Image (cartoon, rainbow, N blue to C red):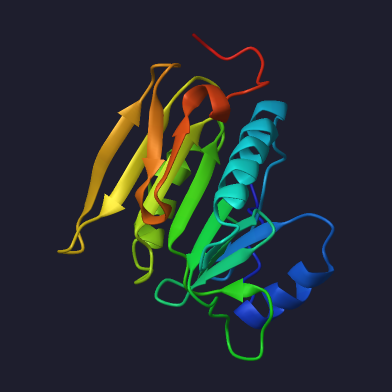
Length: 193
């Protein structure tokens, strides 16, 4: 059996391909990683949170971006598209670039069956190399569940909230915003009990 060799590309080649592509892909270690399509619940949760977060930041020095804002991690070489990005202060971009954010403060990922292990594991390990990152929030799109991870003053990451009660809430401390799970999961369908 002959195995197809994976084509290794440079970050520059990836960015040139990505800027022309119809579908988004992430990039790590010379490999272009196609992103799977999102489910209705995934999109609904992301949209619910985008509206709530965006509205809360109207008079703030922070701003939010949806999943079309690419984040670059120079320490690991990862280029990724978090579902929601919050930046406090002036966004820093790669020099001479317009679409590679370097200084996210909060990253939110809406997990699906196909992304949960990666979002909790290798992706989170890579995200932790971002000096500006203060919070990482994981939202389950198949069942009610939210995890809030925060970096403490010693640079250690701690799970500070884990909610599966559909009537509970969670807080994005960086922007002083508390969101109820009914708001988060509004208009979703067929969640696993």
